[in-house]
Length: 79
Image (cartoon, rainbow, N blue to C red; front, side, top):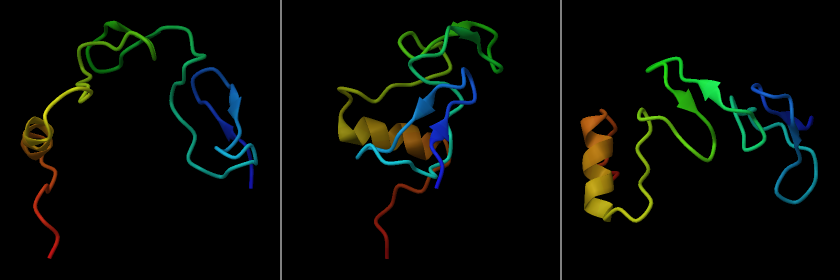
């Protein structure tokens, strides 16, 4: 296993228990300086997301499901 490395700034991240992990590295992390969004061109950072991002924090579950369904995700009950 290897330590996960951020593709944006190169910061290394140990796994949740402090051991190395082979999880897929992130494009950006909280240590990255602000970057220009490839989709909308606005500035973006881990603490100040651009308008492309929708946060579900504090949103009712039904509204979260509606956003995911509108994006083409299957939100039905598994059979």
